[in-house]
Amino acid sequence: MATKPTDHVAGLILAGGLSGVASYLGIYVGGWGAIWTWFSFGPGLIFGIIISLYYHHFLKLKSSKIIPFIVGSTASYCVAYNATVGISHDMDNITPLSLLVGGAIGTFLLLLTFSYTITRIKLPSFIGLLILGSILSLSYYVSPEYLKLIIFFFIWQAVMAGAIRWATKN
Image (cartoon, rainbow, N blue to C red):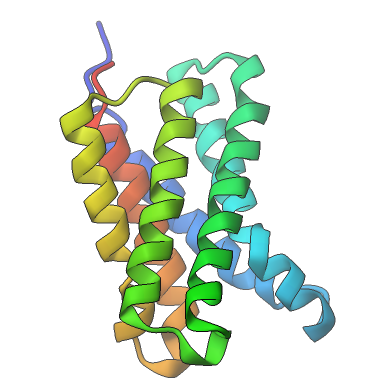
């Protein structure tokens, strides 16, 4: 039986949620000195590892595609993070505009990476996912201060993992 695009959506939402929680927990590993370094790339690394391993195990992604996806996912998040902080000038002044712009840049790069390493995303779906990823970035801004990071990582990574699978055609 052929795999449909909607197969594995729930599994990828769970994998993305796990990635979001692991990203949040990873910020606190290694003490405060390591936080800013980890925060600038760690969530993209964790997302790349968990999502590529899910695709490899359940959807038979070739082993040769795992490392390129992890690298692309890590770079996408790093660029998004730096764009957001750069526009805001520091982490204490994050604005909705900086989140939308950083979210759009990171989502664009992640979708390109996905399209070249896992499976192609058709242009209308690509545009819809780009808008979704940008809007999901606002979850950081609207969350209570003490929950900002866990909510942001969990929502963005879970929803995008499922939505990308939903939007793909194989």
